[in-house]
Structures are given as structure tokens and as C-alpha cells.
Image (cartoon, rainbow, N blue to C red; front, side, top):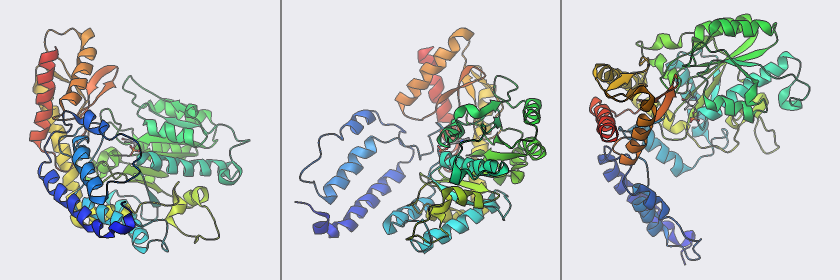
Length: 468
Ligand SMILES: *Cc1c(COP(=O)(O)O)cnc(C)c1O
């Protein structure tokens, strides 16, 4: 009868199984993104809870063998769907170490290393992104929870403007919190507003065209109508469909003039600041009240990791503190929704320590080059159509061979999109841009080469020719 206590000596052999597996896995990083049979492999994990376990090594072996066939190689260089990065070697190893020492990074008494590295990583990230050093922040599970934390700080500020401490007294008696934004806003901000008890409907959109671009005059009129009542403006630095940006500096100027909090969602777009080639896209971010970004996207650390930065970190503490007689006062757990937390700072610190400002700028610029390369190929091709300028790392285009009527293009591109995922050599998703179905590969992985990007275009064309 396997009892972990009887098999303590299996821990190191089990880890060695993983290392041996990693050797093969990492050597085959350009293997299929999705293996044929992945669904069956996943469903082969079934059955009822065993009375008698199979033992450490048997269970780990089963996981490695069947699990690998059932996974999506989203950390590999041929994955262009959504916005998902890989793991740099230093981040990968650091994250394994974080599991080995199994820290609860809630505060210093629980984890000196987790706390010190969170403080240092946040300061390094602020430096990397050119955010004022007097701001502070917190590591989260991703940009959704970072948006949640930052908008919770905004809600606290908004309540205080009206003499109400929302964290203590709640929202009762307050009017609706006005939130103004463009059509670029990410679904996770709406989800955050829902979780915060403000409701998705508290948003007023100012939209100039069918791509969702901001109508700046509309935003100004909307703020004026509030007559100085406090409000929140959300700017998006890098929207997911085509990598476009709201005019952050202009929105910041209006927010300042009309008593509004400026929140910037830069889940991947904040990384534009790392390269002088794209930094201008994020001008004005340094004048925001809160800014978020993701670790598991363009920083290339493992899931899950995001960051929220706020001008006044006390607002986070007011919302997220949880005083208890057994807890110290100043802990990171009091800036985030969770109390017990993974030491995700180890991977962040490790990748920044290992590759520095220049290494991470090189990652960003390789991605910019790949996106520019694909945009050029699309522009020059007779059977592909670029739908938006490739401003950053996302290329928005569709397959458009001669002889297929406009009215059939959406259906054709959707069918190719489904076929690409079944094919599995690369992964790339579709979206809608100004109403049209489009592919939108996002370049975020540190290892992607132009040849990987070419394979993506070849796959779309090859499947497109069969389906057209
Ligand atoms: C990905 C993304 C999010 C959500 O981030 P998660 O890490 O998936 O929670 C929010 N905003 C933007 C602009 C994004 O691209």
C-alpha cells in the first residue's frame, strides 16, 4: 500500500524522471503544437479514485507519458494563438526551484526570499517599463487579477472622493461608478468590474469606427457631462485583435482635467516601452494612476504571473488587507486578492537577472521583427490581405484567394482557422476586425524565428487551398 511516508526516497528519482523527460522535450521544441490524438490522450485519464495508489514513480511516469501527448505546446516557438509566451531557461529553472522550496510568498516571516524578490522584481519592472520609482505594486496570477486589483484601488479612490470608504462600508448609497473607455477594452476589465460589484454596464464607450478606436472628442464630452464627479478612464496599451493602442497621453490629459483615474491595461503592450522602436506607442503611461501587465506573455515566465502597479499603493492595502491576530502588518498578501500565494517572483527575478534589460529588449525586438516580416509577406502576397497595420507584435490578416466572393471570405477563414488547430503544426487563432474574420498571430515567444512564422503562413495557405 503506497503511503508517501513509505516512499520519501522516491522524491529525487521522480524529479530525475522529469529532468530526463525535459531533456527530450526541450530538444523537440519545434515538435507539433498539438499532436494528433491529443484528445484521446487527455481522456485516457479517467476512472474512479483508486483505493490503492500506483506509487510515486508509476504515477509520475503515467503523467509524463500520457500527459505530454495530451498537451498543447503553447510555450514553444510555433504557437501564435491568443497572447502566450514561453519560459526562458532561467525562468523555467527558477520556477521549478519555487516549487521545490514551496514558499508561501505572503510576507517576510513566511518567505524572506519570496518577499525580497517580489520587492526587487517589481522595482526592476518599474525601471524596465519607465514607471516612476515611487509607485509600487504586487505580483498577481495574470492581467485579469492585476486589472481586478488595480480597478479595486480605483474604486477605493473613487469612494474616498465622495467621503466613503468602500472597503469598509461597501457601495450602498453611492451612485454608479462611471467608467469611460474605447472599444479596445479587454474582456478581463469588464470581468473585473463585475467582480468588484460595479457591473459590466457601468462602462460608457466612446468609439470612432468599427475597429473600436477611441473617439477622443466623445470621451471629452462624456467626462464634461459628469461635471467634475470622479470617474475612471481605462486605456488599452495593445488590444488583442491587432495590437493597436489607445492614445494614452491624450486620455491622461483629459483624465487629469476632469477628476478621473487613468487605468492602463498593458497586458502585453506595456512591453512596447522596452524598445525605442515602439516606446512612443505608450507615451503617457507614466502619468497614469494604475498600470498592469503580464509575466506569462511577453516576459516569458511560466504561468501564472502578472503585475499591477499603482501610484498610491496604500489604496491596494485598504482593499486587500486582512488583519488577523496571527498575521504581521506589512505583507504582500495585503495587496492582492489571495492570502497564500506562489513565489512567482523567483522566475521574474531570475529572467531579469539572467538576461537583463538588453536581453529582454532583444526578445521584444525579435518579436517585432517577426511581426514586420509576416506583415510584409502578407502585403506582397496575392492571396492574403493585411487588415490592420502591424503596429506591434500582432498581425491581423485574412486569406483571400482570387475568385472567392467577399461574402464567402468569413466562412472560409473560419474553416481554415478550425483546420489549423486540427492540423497542429502551428497554432493560430481567428478574430473579427472591423466585422471581418481575420487571423491574428501574436509574436511573444522568445524562441520564434522567421522560419517558424513562415510555416504559419504556409499552413494557412495549404489548408486554404484545399478548403477554397
Ligand atoms: C491577456 C490579456 C488580459 C488578461 O490577461 P490574463 O493573464 O489572461 O489574465 C487582459 N488584457 C489584455 C489587453 C490582454 O491581452
